[in-house]
Length: 248
Ligand code: ADE
Image (cartoon, rainbow, N blue to C red; front, side):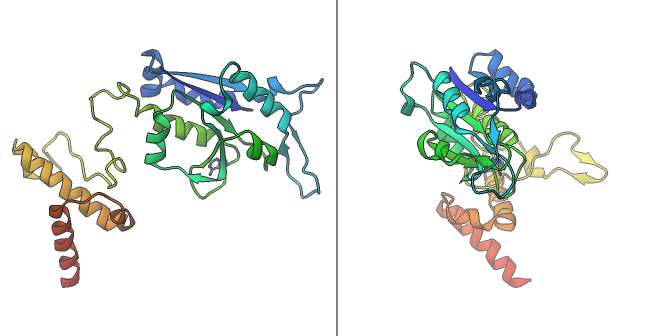
């Protein structure tokens, strides 16, 4: 079973993890998620977790001691370097499906949610082993980012999704965007489901899906085509798309 510890000033925010697939994954024993309130590791009458920055400049910075104390107590008895200690920050490496895959291989993860203007630099330098950003925008805290990472990682754990292999053709899992999906009714307000999907020819369906994934990626995220693994047939199809574009 994977274990995920989350250090935060706002454990209440993590209610999202109690629903749907994430809830079922925990109930099924695939993952054990522990929330830790940073304030509980702060000392003194007021259990202060943040202070203004040295040198001025406004905003508040999370103090190092409560974070070090909390992480060391969470990982007590464990070799500190054995498990990723990840700081959620807009300065981290951009989160991707392949990072989610990489993290899903670990037996333990520890996520630290930043708040205010940031965290004392010594946490970065001497405690964390990784820093992750979920995108080039600034959130008020790392909690939403941590939930994004936990969600993306947990759904990859074997058994988390209903159908075996359901994660394998996801957008990004293949390096491409997924093509369109349809369900009943076959005709809705005169808009019909493509015949091939109702043909019952598994081979033709698979080929159509691959081509629609390529088409969608070509239209929306051509940058992904530079790194996707492409067959000769894929390349031929992309050539057709490119030729079609020249005609118009
Ligand atoms: N904390 C604030 N903004 C963030 C972001 N974009 N990614 C991760 N953590 C954050």
